[in-house]
Length: 439
Ligand code: UGA
Image 1 (cartoon, rainbow, N blue to C red):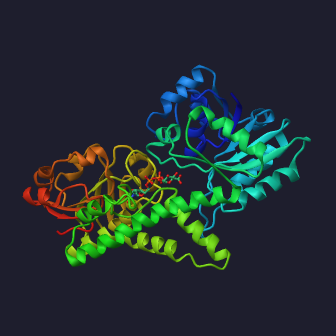
Image 2: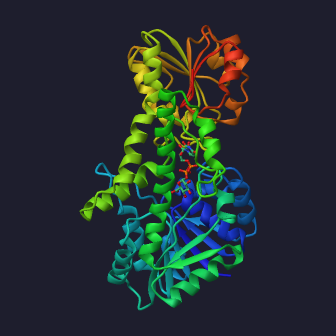
Image 3: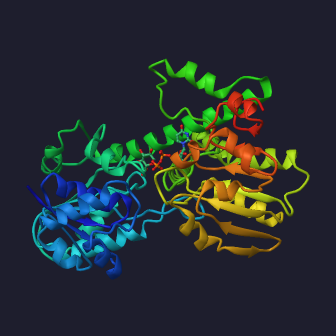
């Protein structure tokens, strides 16, 4: 078993650290935030993720994982140091690498043994060559340090499971020594490993995410066409899904993709291509379709209603997808400001994300409109003139079509996630608008 350090305790770093401990490695997770470290030592995760806290507590109790702000102590004699800090999007679409650079510098100043540095964060192709050079330039002790790329494929909401049962581990290295050391860390997981060079590994991450983003945007594009020609996108997707070459997953049309990855990684790869004088037309199309898609429901509702002014609007779901409290690039963040601007009184329900949303839009007046957070679906629907569904939480999918008829003043529903059968809503007497299907 190896002595590992993990830099960054966001989705990527914390989940990786906990799972490495779970398979038997000795792990120290490093974060700059003293409070966060204290909380994690108490078994409380800074992110909402099913099953994570249980593993945090279990492995902390056995002493296999610890959390610290003392990076020097953590890096000093680690066999392998994983970097899982953020690479947020900059206004021009490029990735901000300043967190990676800070950690690389700290590693260079701390390591006293030969060590492999493994970058899990999504970084532009070629970045890890630079990270290696950067560490060499600032190394204090005379030790060997190499850098490997090991992109992460976990999805929020199923992060622990995705890590322990990943479909593949991608390892990008430039030497046998690095390859073998990283393979050894993953050996206890018993998962398929694809070993390639560093730049290919970096590209696999972008190419995979952007392919999935493209798949969703393609389905959204086809959905919009379905509405015009009288086809049903869910039937179309079902018919497509039987073809193994297309697959059953990620065929759901909806209100566009959000989160911290697809929006950022499509723009980043498009930027990388542009830097090389190449126009990445397919990915550009995925970005364009997604931008329009996020407002498609609002546009439909605006056509249907004369005004939102003074209307009670029920909002079901705020997060970018179920199973997470993350709001990054969520459709709700695009639509709600427009509704408030128009003078709507919003009653929002989300089983997990309401507090985060309230940090952006506190309860109370917002210009002509207002924001109220409620504890359940019924309170949101009570007396509402119109309802928007932005996230397909289990609690929202469980709402019977009749409930809209019963609780709303006028049962008018705009569903961005196609969670109901059109016929069921019709039967219940609900005017139902969704994506890529007839009204
Ligand atoms: C995504 C990838 O799925 C992970 O493999 C990857 O590791 C991760 O990005 C990352 O780069 O860190 P994530 O953003 O957590 O994971 O969430 P997804 O489940 O992929 O969903 C992304 C968005 O696409 C959500 O807004 C979701 O509602 C939307 N989506 C997904 C659709 O609109 N239709 C679908 O059929 C599937």
